[in-house]
Image (cartoon, rainbow, N blue to C red; front, top):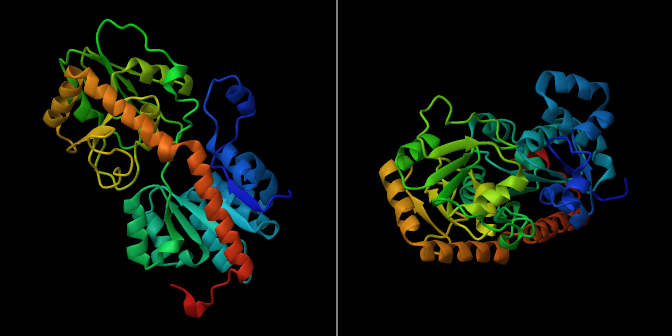
Length: 371
């Protein structure tokens, strides 16, 4: 390993990843582009098992593969100037290991934050103070950024906002032509904290077909349509990323019904639809405020309000020109700052800045300075 950076992948990298990307069957993998962008070695579950030894095997049995992955990072820490962890599930235990098991100089640690405002995760920072061994919190939601800064009194340069991304070359309008359908179609996509009961109530009897793609490669949530009566105009299916692209192309717009969340639930589907030139309607939550721009690329609706959601859907269905205008605005939003390329540029700058900071002084925080 000759790179200066280690990047974790909380999963197993598919053996046919390159072939599927090259053949156009799936978008580029963010971790692959990140590794190329800032010169990182990738460490997934398979590679971590080889590097973690008997202690790692024990930790995986006790605490799962993410704990094992954190241990592998700890064992490899001396080879790198920076470690980028792809979520709190790896970053928090790694920070604890760096703090309590490895005093002295260490690599810079940048942790991507999805949602840290839950009790189990906050214990690491409230009780253990592991923020001393996280040099950069990279947040996808400004609410999470502000929460971290306020609760733990961290300076702005350590808690950074980076908009999420989409492969705008794969999810592009010219890559999938809309098919001729008997009547209008709208779609809803994903699992994480989706409020599908509200959507089902809102679209009952609607003069349009509704396709719910209730699946996610990341979320462990159950499908909230299960056990519910599905209206005749609604179908619930699972799609590959390749087929999702066609679903967006065939749909007049995307609806993103969310529970009251304080993180970026739904961001992947929102950006995919916007990248395909589709308008979006989204529940107005605390966390989902950094993608949809009211009246420019979509509309917000109140949380858990079927009547308001139906009214918004009917207005866009009745005004295809307005839906198309918002869709163009969505594509423009992606191209101006939320493409995969923009994402890699931002993270590369953060990583290189952290490394330079570490080289100007060892990444050691004494007990007297711990927060």
